Length: 496
Ligand SMILES: Cc1cc2nc3c(=O)[nH]c(=O)nc-3n(C[C@H](O)[C@H](O)[C@H](O)COP(=O)(O)OP(=O)(O)OC[C@H]3O[C@@H](n4cnc5c(N)ncnc54)[C@H](O)[C@@H]3O)c2cc1C
Picture 1 (cartoon, rainbow, N blue to C red):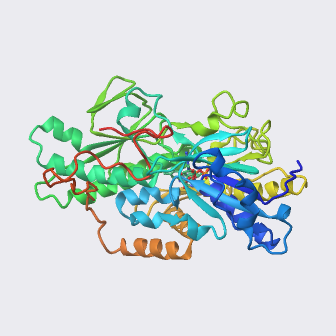
Picture 2 (picture 1 turned 180 degrees about the vertical axis):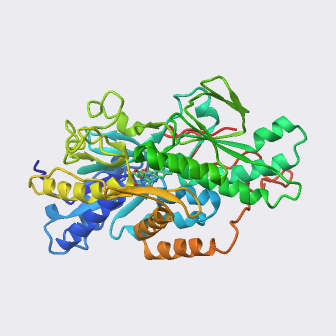
Picture 3 (picture 1 turned 135 degrees about the horizontal axis):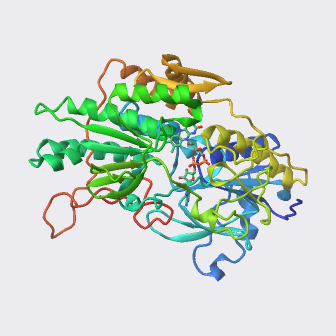
């Protein structure tokens, strides 16, 4: 593919997760090395009427004045658009629930990670591949604007989809964003507060029961950390309360991807830690005060956590002709999207065929951070009329924490469990955190938790009422979880 342009070209990356950030970093690194990286101009965002925008596109090379002496057509600007101004290190999200890690320590400001890349914060709403532009909505003001691109990288991740089980979308809590993890922690603590003074024993039991759905790695880690939190918090109630964390999984043991021996080990460890395991059962319904299983038994509960149910990102799914029948975008092995000119897709939002298995590449951070740099090199090759190369990566292993001092995993084909797996899990993710500062903070959090009890404060995010003419007090209603908004089309709205 040869791209010809008489002005600075702009590569736009959608999504500031593992795939998007590593793509933007590699693009900036390579372009800096070639002295072609243009400071991204801000003045071609299309606010206002057309006559006001006249001539703006031509202005784009002016914004790149830093690159004196470099032919304008060779300059490339990189823009990354994300709905938050931070990157979330999802593998450590579960640790926020127990308080093992401070909430902000698993996120890193994008602008600190992306030197010389313009970061736009807003919701990507639409991709117009005919006119090569992307529509973005500001989070607070809701104002919309268009961003033009010469090359586009779609790395928006996937979304939580609870529609498979009636009632789940209405009542279950997902664990995907920082806001989700923070909300779940707060909610669990507030349920304990309510339960402590609840006179009705049945209602009290529901308030104290937390059902986690799914025995994959996220479900297991969430159940272990939630158990840790509610157990630690319960000890601070002199009246004595007995919280229950129940994990429901459709198979006879959790973590089936690790094989029977480790799966059975993980199941036993969770039981010993206090998690109640309901195995070989599926959820058929979620109501405001209970869940129903496929054998018609019901569990009274006020908190259901869903860790199953993945769906294609709606913005990507709307790309006509580029997706499979389920809506997953299907790039070729170079990450280029067939049928769409100058568009690449990677990470969780794409279904990439693994040449080793013929199936889709696993949706993991481990893959995304390898895909990003590879895609970046392919995009630059395409811009320069050079051939692109196919991606191939064999997973080196997988580790899962089972809570305090226990884990399971497989590294280079060797299966590990117990303290060693837990230690490897912590060491690996500590080293993988994107900045030294965050590594130090998390290392300190983990060191302190060896000696100190986890924090059990529920943070009240309700705002102080300040409107004139109203009684002073708190605004009613649940706080909106960070990273979500009630009318977001790509998120499940949590109601309780
Ligand atoms: C709780 C949890 C634990 C996990 N643990 C592990 C693990 O231990 N090991 C492992 O390898 N993998 C793990 N994963 C999977 C891993 O995190 C994902 O595979 C990885 O994050 C995929 O990267 P991505 O960049 O494709 O998507 P994401 O990291 O999801 O990034 C997508 C980005 O796009 C942004 N975005 C989405 N929609 C919009 C929009 N409309 N407008 C603007 N921005 C938008 C999001 O804010 C986000 O920043 C875990 C996932 C979760 C949820």
